Length: 270
Image (cartoon, rainbow, N blue to C red; front, side, top):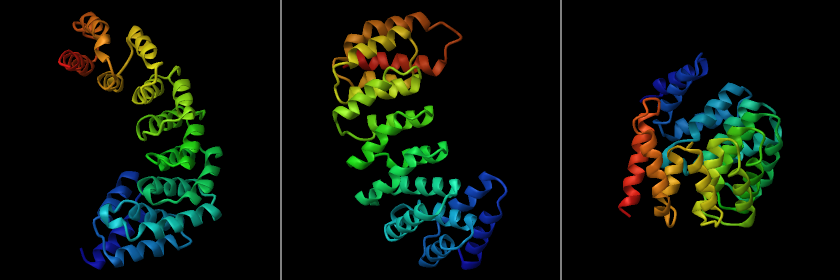
């Protein structure tokens, strides 16, 4: 792709009137990893035009293995924005960019990120949660624990997922928030939390699993928990009973029944 074609992609991204069209241009630009293209993105980030800044961040945030040379500089630019910008969209995009590159962030960054946990913007708090996924360091875990108490269900769910299955760190604080969320009325949050406790062989998991089985209201995430815990065979009679009860029910999701059947077979073969 020549320089003229690359320039047209930047122009189309800037003028895109739909989200889908915008991302089509960004995806194409990410395929063009040259020093000139990277330099162009940084010049856009340094401009005073918010749209140009967003384009530069979106392109540079995901360049595969080619991101190694540009990511430290990108993160420096982003944390500079956090000191000066109040634009919700730019901050959110920057946080998502961090999430795609968070193995490069340093301990000093967590005190900057922490301020966003109290943002009035749900989008910013959600992007903050994404930015911390998979980080085992105490600074990230501390923020995620607070986000796992967030008033927004999608943030609470995402943070519970991050603590429960994206890291193996096992502390009392993590178990406490996972157990609290294992009692949530929201099915997704509850089952994410149960999975996280099961991953840590928490002794309370057996009671929680029995409760879910009695409710007969679980999805494929719960199947995965059943298949990966110790002594899961003890639940076979209840699971078989549920399958026999619903296997001819035309109102039950067919894929769910198949997953339930597969779960039974795998447990029987253990």
